[in-house]
Length: 123
Image 1 (spheres, rainbow, N blue to C red):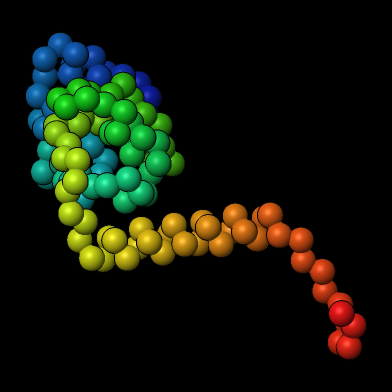
Image 2: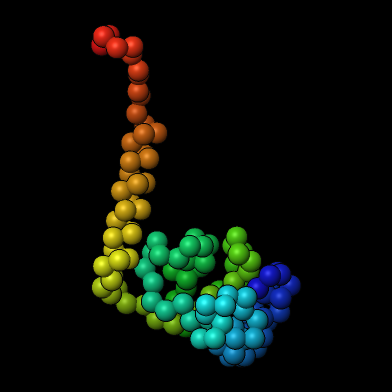
């Protein structure tokens, strides 16, 4: 959703008992999930591009709905239907998450390192 006012209107309708999927199909600006009633499918931490949306999803209990959440893409309302503790991750996602973790580790080492450069021949 593009505006906070629209997100608040949708949230009010949800609290009054409206169907999440129907409202997502009507109000969502996300063309990839609009047709499926806002269903993002299964995802693990680190998979979503919008951290605020991911944080909202993982803070909810099963069948809970978040208040409107702002991201770089607009406003979102998240509903967590269920979670599975040890759900396998597909190989492509595992590879990407591993690469991301490795890159964060390398960056943390660089930040803490003291590097001196000497002209050739000096040590």
